[in-house]
Amino acid sequence: MSDYLDLLGLPFMQRAILAAVFTGLAAPAIGTYLVQRRMALMGDGIGHVAVTGVAIGLLTGASPTWTAVLVAIAGAIAIEVIRERGHANGDVALALLFYGGLAGGVLITGLANESGGRLNTYLFGSITTISVDDVLAVMVLAAVVVAICVGLAPQLFAVAQDQEFARVAGLNVRFYNLLVAVLAAVSVTVAMRTVGLLLVSALMVVPVATSQQLTRSFRTTLTAAMLLGTLASVGGLLLSAYLSAHARVAPGPTIVLLALAGFALAWPAGVLLRRRRRLRQPFPVVASAAHQTIDVHPHEHGDDCGHVAVPHGDHVDYVHDGHRHAAHGRHYDEH
Amino acid sequence: MTDPTPEPVVELRNGAVAIAGRPILRHIDLTVRSGEFVALMGANGSGKSTLVRALTGLWPLANGSLQLFGTPFGSFHDWRRVGFVPQRGGAASGVPASVWEVVASGRLTHRRLLRPLARADRAAIAEALDVVGLAHRSRESVSALSGGQQQRVLIARALAGDPELFFLDEPTAGVDLPNQQVLADTLATLSSRGATIVLVAHELGPMAPLIDRAVVMRDGRVAYDGPPLASEQVATAHLHEHELHEHGHHHHHAEPERHDHAPHIASPIEGDHR
Image (tube, rainbow over all chains, first blue to last red; front, side, top):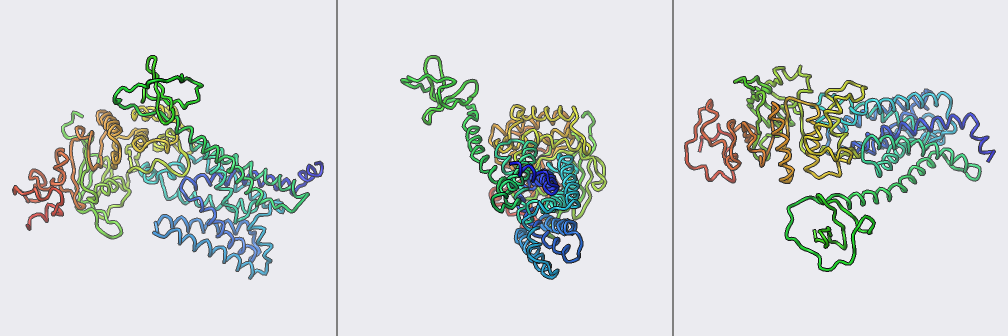
């Protein structure tokens, strides 16, 4: 155990924890807006395009982080333009972009005489080899993403919820759409070093999917997703560091699997919660048909009788073997 | 509203809309005056929804000129005076959103960037929820509501902005009668407060007594513009003689029966060659 604490005290580990915290906050923040627009896979698409950006960095000797940011932003804008033009087969056009990005990246990496191993650190993340400069870049970019996602939440929410209404409310919808695309591209490159380009989308989408199992409002979904994302990325990092004493455990996949484990726990709870809510939803008040009483009813309904109690106008119906029993004087009525 | 001729709020002159190069709306002249309650009616595909989308700027005009509150559309920025209720489907999205949150987005026209909600904003949101009768469900997810209730949420969202001019696109489509009645009561409240209302409707239902004026669309042109019609008259509105005199075509024939179900006439102008 003291070995483990020593490990956490090492500078590379502290850099990794910082990167994990900021990534865990930023990726689900923008991911919430992507899921709201039903574009959950957009992060995945940008991630593929960013591979080419990394390769260009390797080829030219520039910092792969910054070339990836630029190419990812260009790719995100291209995706947004294709989406806005409303091509009938928009998803096919997006797929072309994804594969072009991945193939271009692998090809250019070869041209740069770099090994596949170097590219792998970007594809699947290598948070423990992150440099001081990269940590600073991650922190600045992530802070910008979080600040915009939270600060402009009313506008971004309205545009994602209903574009036509937002336009008639005088919002510049195209600007906000491009802003979301650019923010998604920036968070992809932020998360690139943590979980890798091929797993980026998981950190953007899975915490959102988990939190919306249990939430009813947008604001709590956003907050909970950011919290869960941070828990998953820091927890995954620490877990993989702990396990690395026994086996080779990569942090990137550990983070993603931990996030998925959270979803696996939340999903049944969400199903139960929604079922309970549906069962207890009040029955509509309609002018009733004939007054039908129940002949013999040995059971007395009450707060703890075990039958589901549903509000019905000014009284309560007890759901009983597919019937609705309502107290009426000394007997029960069929409702 | 004692002024005999209130100022025009919406003024469309010779308006035309083309979608993907095909002319959809042609030669539309429409003036809506302050305080009027206008129903845009017509069959499916007659262009009534396209017209309301042109009036809100969602479709650009291919021709003609549009003024809102006396300002040419290009220089109109006073969006807090306009409320829009799109066709249903906009209420739910990929992430849960509470009823209150959706209605709160109607206050965006009053809020500056990066400022929290002011007390006046909260009061307007609460009042809008109250008017549509959903105050007790404000914390629930929009997707948990029925279709008619979601429609009421969208109306509350427009209400929260406190506009003077409302555009509603088929608010009663697929809504059951009790919910239609709530919608009609809401619109009656708005109208009595002096709001101008432009409503797209296939059938008026409980809203019929509220209408001041009906505009019937047919194949992308205005076929009738005048006092409210009974719903069975809408299909034959272009055969009535007391409107559109400027075209000089009068239809005195006592034979409109065969047009009741399958109208054969595209517009009043082409109606004469029979």
